[in-house]
Length: 389
Image (tube, rainbow, N blue to C red; front, side, top):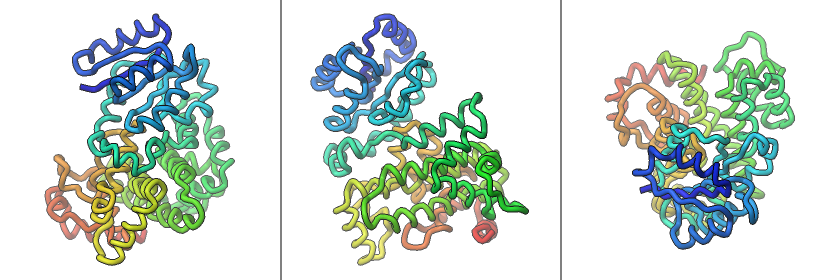
């Protein structure tokens, strides 16, 4: 049974929560606290899977509580609840919260977010592994730049020029947006040099993915000497995202599916960033094993760390609230045969793109899976030709 702690000092707000959560009372063990002190006492006696806290509390703030949880209970997922008045403080509040909810909490949406956040909990539930990955720092919040820009992209009242203006403030991000829109993926007759025009052509999904990519680089900078690693990871991510999009376009997929798949290409290797930053000694051992034996990177990672970059990435995305479809595709992009569904879709396209775009010992085609997805050699030949387009 899932154990949730709601930290809310207001009795009327608690009553509203009880009403919203009533349908889940047989599935969840729900507890309430009215202050940081009370929440800490409850958690220390009976740790919770998820802590959902208001921002303002009688003896501090939800972020102070989250800071303690982040260091002392890294496996606990942290949801911050804010009201309309507190929204303007978003930048300051993102720090130690992994997800931010807005009052009033909608029952169906909240249940889906909790289920998603806990869906891959079994992957990273070993305290020793959490310590290996840097304790609480291994479960950081969503990159700030992505949180801010993605909210703008979802806000119907936000203009395109506002979004483009925010992106234009970041030279690296602006260059990524312009480079993608002028790539072969869009086959434009004339190059685009204006960020606002580029945002319009790309659409919110792809722009959001690029913002996410830049946010990851800022979050997981590994110090001196990491520039080449980040550059190569970014190159592969963009290439894989573009290839996944091309495959799904070939298959006649909807625009929203293509945008989800583009994000998967961008984010599928975030686990490597986590390992390289929070487990540098193990990361070097992984590299040495790959160089010495020529084994796949996922095999070397599991041998050294007990978990692969695919599973770490999937866990992060689940905690951050991305769709189950995206989480599962990323978790199994090297091992799609573990999927129950065998069809031409997001997961299949990502697996194909990963294998086609790889340059060294990262993965091979899962032929049995592709056969069940009705991807034969002729179609695979057509898909492989897309790489140069």
